[in-house]
Structures are given as structure tokens and as C-alpha cells.
Length: 481
Image (cartoon, rainbow, N blue to C red; front, side, top):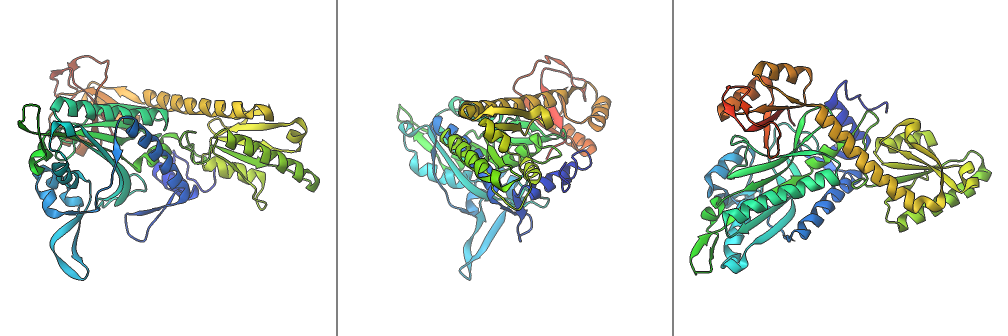
């Protein structure tokens, strides 16, 4: 265990902050509640961004950019929207030393400014669907912050689409939820539950909000991406209309959807252990680190020559590889340092390996001897290393899935709910026929919130765990970040 990292069982929150510090992912900024993302953390975010951006473009979306400042009057056009965001708004009232004629909101999200532009761009059914995404920063004035999970300013993408019919818009909302789930499962190695948010938890101004919910290593939930069907609420507020095939004017139906830098937090807390980070190979800034080892000066040249050859081979094979040539640190320190940073695979090269034209491979996801493979021929590395990275990716998903399933509990009464939540935690699946008031009461009494109503469930119908009313609606409750 890294000496400077608090064990997870001792204090999971402290462990999380320790890992972010020691792995040099981010630091607090001079402005309370915001953070500086350091290069290693930003590389991780870039790999998340690239995996999502590729999927967006494959599904027909184009990237654009919209202004940081939004007229206050824009937010006020959609009453539920402004009411939902009012406590979190940062407002500019002075610019260039003069009081502004109209206050400007630093965007908390961009439905309103994009709605304004869509009203200008959309005239006919031929202009639909309009599928646009932007990568940007947003500001929400949070009082309780935690790096990556909840900060005053954060990075994200927000997709905004306009469609001719409710059916098309709702189908697209679900399609983007599936895109998020595909990324989470196949790139981040995080098994997620797809579901719809309750009325109490849905996005301000939405008709329906969909979510992917992930379980962290301590059993808490993390909302990791959301997709919203907005109906024609914003279209009516901003006059987003089109002429249909019969030359009749109709309101568009719109969607919005987003994933933020909290996905970095999800990766940390799903996979990390007491040694530090464990990064899935598809997202790891460095997939392979090469550590040359020698004791005698006469051994150095041969070891370094083989290390350089291996590095060149792997780069040519498309592997993100780094050669650790720090002369002031021992091999043992380097092993621990790269394990703490979560690099999926380590290659050790010593004098014996040079003599055999072979290397040692050490997997981050399998500690000790279990994860080591000795005497791997150098000439096989361009095949062996990508295969092993794929094995690590699959194993990390399998481990996280097994942990989630083992910590998902079906409960049938409120007393059992409270007992299981306190003794075991995790996801609590229940039959649910309660109201928003019931939901609020449960959260007040247990600190567990209704994470989602899963889109897929095998529980069938049964009595609600709280009200006793017969229902086929299933809900997942959990304590959450």
C-alpha cells in the first residue's frame, strides 16, 4: 500500500482525495470550489472525450460552440428551467467598468442560448433533425465540492438536438443513453444501470430524464451521464418551429444530454485500490511503462538498448508507452509510483532479460506474482502486449460487474431497507409505488436517494416496499455522490 494513501476501508473519501493528489490528477484552485486539472488528469479526460466524440460523430452529430454568457431573460423564458437552476447561477452585472443593461448568466447549461439559435436555423422539415454537440465548461455555484465529482466549474459535453416529432426525439434520447452506456462499459470498464429518473429527480424543464448509474467501490452510486427528452417546452419558449410537408407550422421536439469530468471521478472510484489508481487500458494516458533495471555500469548500455527497441516496437503498434529513465530513483520506487498512477501494464527489463531477448510483464490489475509473466520474447510483444491490454480491460469490467452484482440487494420492506442500507450499502432494488413526498422522506431519513427506475428488470410485479401497493415499477435506491 502506498504510504501516503489512506486505505479505502478506513476513509473512502480521504482515499479519493489522496489518490488525486498523489497521482497528480488535479489540485484545488485559488477560487473556492474550483480545481486545476493537471496534465495527467487532463490526458485521462482527453481519452474520455475522444471516446465519446467518436461515438457522437458516428451517430451523425456535429460539434459547434456557443457563448459562455447568456442573457438572463433567456433563462426566464422557461419557468421550470430557471427555477431549477436559480440557486446555482453565477451572474455578471458589470462589464468594462459599467453596469450592464441586462445581467448575463455564466452558462450552467446551454438549452436557452441554443434554443435561441435553433429558432433562427430551423425553417422547414428539411432542416430536421438538427444534431449538434458542444464541448465546453459550465459554472454551477456549488457549496459542497469534491474534485471531478462536483465543482463550481467543470468540463463537459452537451448535445442538443431538434426533431419533427415526439417519437423521433424520444428515440434519440434513448439512443444517446445507449451511447453513454456503450462508452462506460466498453471504454471505462464501468457496468452501468440504464434507467429513467423520477419526477423529483428529473432535469429542470424536461419531460423525462434518463440516466446511467454506476456503483463505486464503496457501494455508493454515481450518476455518470444523463439524456433528457425536453418535449416542446423549449421550442414554445424560444419559438423553434418548422413547416411540415403540408406547409403547416409545428413546434420541434428537442433533446439534451451530457457527460462531464465526473466520469474521471467514476473511473477513479470504480477501479482504484489501496495502491492508488487502476486505469482501464482504453482510457489510461500511459498504457505501458518500461522500467529498465541494472546494477553494474557495464549492464546499462544493453538494458537501455533493449528498452529503446521495445519502446519503438510498441509505439509502432499504436500502444501509449513510456520509458522511465529516472536515474535518481530505484526500480522499487518506480514500480510503486507507476502502480499508484494506475498504468495497466509494466515491462521490466534487466540484464538476464537482455541475455534471453525477453522481458517481464506485470499487470496492474493482478497484484504480486499472479500478475507477472516472465520470459516473454521481445519479438512477440507487438502481439502479446495488445492482447494483454485487452485481457486487462475485460478483467476490470468483469471485476466491477461482479462487485456491483454482489452489492445489489432486493428488499421488500422499509425496515429491511434501512437495515441492509446501514449494514451492507450498495444498490437496493425495490418495488416502488411511492410519491415524490415518499421519496423525499426516505432521503431525509436514510440519506439514500432514488437513483433510477431501471429500463430492464426481472423482478416482475409485487407490493411496494413502502406503501404495500401492488406495482410492476422497480426502483433502485442508494447513497450517492
